[in-house]
Image 1 (spheres, rainbow, N blue to C red):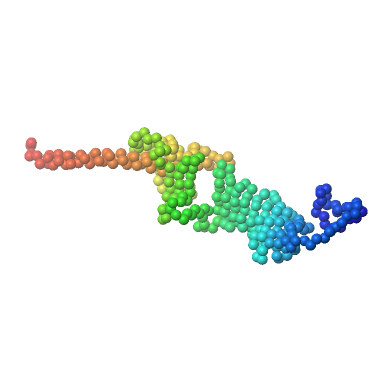
Image 2: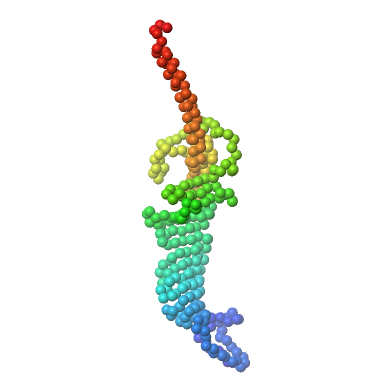
Length: 294
């Protein structure tokens, strides 16, 4: 038989690497290949833009040889070897690296997260947290997240429950504004707040210090929760699956209307007392001016 000889056979239609074997007369034509032809070389790489696998003129490299634990590599290799992209065959992560393979620039993780080696910043999907932003490896003074807008009509962040807006972070160009939904169309109003002073009297305030260091007047969340449930998130003594503390959270802005109503009650009582002052002064003056023994 006539055998077409080739140094290396990467594969054939029979799923083997055997050389082609013809049982009859076969005509073989040798056409001039296109200047930018696509081919796979002995390493399994496909090069576009140059006929030389190691040539400096390559514009695009597609490689799948498992070198260094990466199952696929695609890169632009212009004069300065600008950038590669590669897929880790173990984790499935997709990375951008420099042309010399010496540093990773950015990574898209299989779990949907993003990672940057500069400062160790990453954005992950993490269980019940949904989105997790971490900059634990960053430098002091470096922000894990920066929000920027070009005009005061745009929100830095907006929060929704379904399709209903429930809050936003905005700026007026010089300060940051934190807003929560307070539209009258979303409320049922029963009348003026009553007994705000009683609520305040029933919630102790302590001179306390957080264990990481911050001393100031404070509530204890579970005590506040017993009087104003909506101001506290979480349950007393709750722990996470790993046994660590699942702390209660206090939303202190919920208390502002209560303090406001209490202040109004105090001012109303003060106004009543102040209205009595002229009468009391007149009576005291009259008593002081009474003749003796009268």
